[in-house]
Length: 75
Image (cartoon, rainbow, N blue to C red):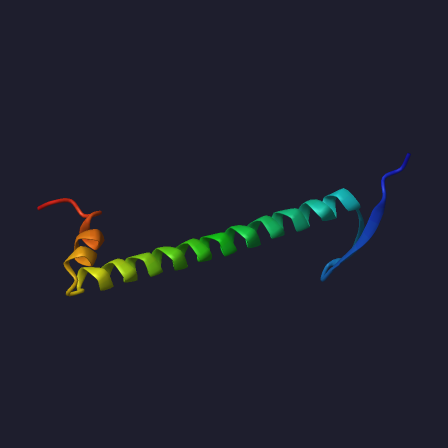
């Protein structure tokens, strides 16, 4: 049984490549895109958490201040 092929076009010309090879390239690209999206989401969550903690640390409410400073070591 022969393997299915598609034509790949590039600035250097065209060539026949296997569908598995093309699928593997798209898989790598999608993995990178997902990783970047997850990293951006994590960075946003971390930034929001730090912002909220700092806002609570500067609050006049003593309970909020204690909760915000709980992660920092005693000096």
